Image 1 (cartoon, rainbow, N blue to C red):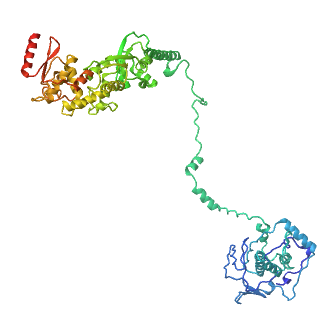
Image 2: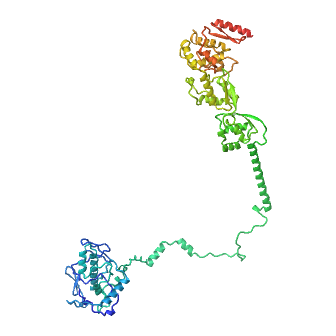
Length: 627
């Protein structure tokens, strides 16, 4: 493009805006067939890449090309005329270009001043393309040239970049040197023609903050028109609030007496309290209530303290029996019934606080009404009463009699002994192999009669274990050998220690003197194994056992497995606990032909007979003597 369209201007009258560098215009003209490179910020492009389109307000299609012009006629790339402009709008174009020269010192000063004001950005936004006119076309050409320079400068090949710069009349920048405006760009836009009042480009581009390195601020949101604001206010309007806000103030009523009302609480009449009662009377009422409550509480505390500490009690001994199955409530009831405590709930509270239930053990205790709560609990503990008691169990005692004797000596209760004998844990004794447990007297015959030393309120386990251990010791190995001999010579070979103990228990109850024990054993074995009649033993002691120990009357017709007048053979269990002499007699019976015996009241021993007639004669004779 020639510079004749820009007439000469006075150098001194040039403004700073005319000297402003604009990289969008260069002196190389644009042909009609070239495409405008599209704008892209920051990212360097290779030669093969396509430049994405940069659009402002009115986007331009990629295939759309800018029409070229010639001497007042715009033409599209196809060569068709778009329109004819007046000739006066275009200055005369000559082949010789007109150049403008400025003093170098002034140009240098203008460039430094422009660079001092703002830093040159890496890229520039594209200027708006006017609808028509040659000036718009010139501005677009400058934009195209500036974009080409930017893209070419980012190429990785140094040689290609240098050729591009030289083709545009530029030199390669030196590292560390200041960036100065392009003099050619200044020729384009740094001055105006003589007949031009404004430069042929949009001056608003010089106000773009991106041009001087400033960050582009986001455009403020357009304010809503007044109508839109009114609609928003209507949408969020609270009608109730507006009604309250616009409501008229209420009219204040003036009292009829024409004087302002008093503020604060009304004064009470002096001398009156609650419900109109005079204050002095209220005070006396409160004092009376406090005194009554105090006296009542004091009396309650005194009564409780007297019961806990046993104040004012008489000296009276009391015996209390505690069983294994008793609960704390049962113990409390027993103490209350015995007169040892006055308030059950108070003792229960004390017991729960002091864990008395863990300290109280089953047993028979001699207590006193003068004992306080602490003494009562301590005296009912076996650890505090470890007094030893010597007890002799006679030979032939039943389990019922033995348990009663131990309870009488306050060693253990009969109930606890019977319960433990039936279901308690015992050692595996060999002689209890065929014994069926589950009944309170199931250990009958094996509680060996002897003299023992027990502790008062001892446990049933300790008592029964001590007596069973004694039986195990007394039934020696020699006696076991005698049992084998008995099975070989007398019995049918089926006797065990259990059958021997049953025979010994009968001998123990029937014998009047130990000297006749083997002879009575011989009668029993003769009836069991050597008699032609049914093996009915006809022993009165078994009837007494079936009657619960009552010997006042012998009922031979009683329906019981222990009735040897009706049931053949031995009784189901021993009928007593035999001593050592009876056990030895049962193992070593006397060999004879006696099948009967009767007690002689005059001598206290039995008279033996071989026949029924002989036995009946002795019975008649002894009956006549007793009359």
